[in-house]
Length: 128
Image (cartoon, rainbow, N blue to C red; front, side, top):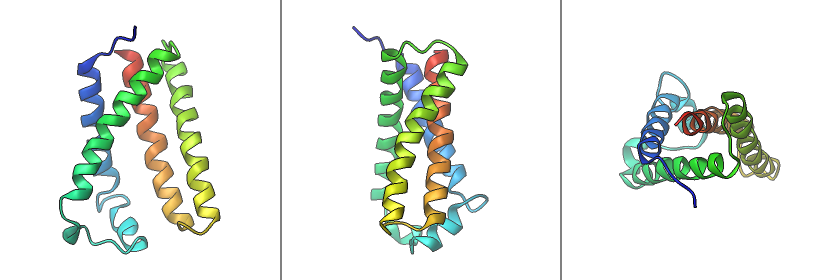
C-alpha cells in the first residue's frame, strides 16, 4: 500500500503555484506569453486560476505517486525522474507545435516551466 506525505503534497502544490506565479509574471515570461496567446488575464476571470490551483495539487499528488512507485530515494534519481516526466510532456507539446497548434516560442516557454517545476516536485517528494 502506498503511503503519502500530505505535508509534502500540500507543500508541492503551493510551490507549484508560487513558481508558476513567478515564471508567468511580467518579470519573466508573463507578458510575452500573454501576447503570443492573445490573452488578457485581467479579463480571464477566476476560472483559469482555479484550474491552475487544481492542476498544482494534482501534479504534486501524481509526482508523489511516481516517486513512490519508482522507489526513488536520491536527489539524482529524483532529477532523472523529473526529467523523464518532463520529456514525455515536452514531446507531446512538440507534436502539437509541429501540427501548428502552438508557436515555437509558446512551446519553449511552456516546456521550460514544466521541466523546472516537475523536477523540483520530484526532488521535494523524494526528500520527504
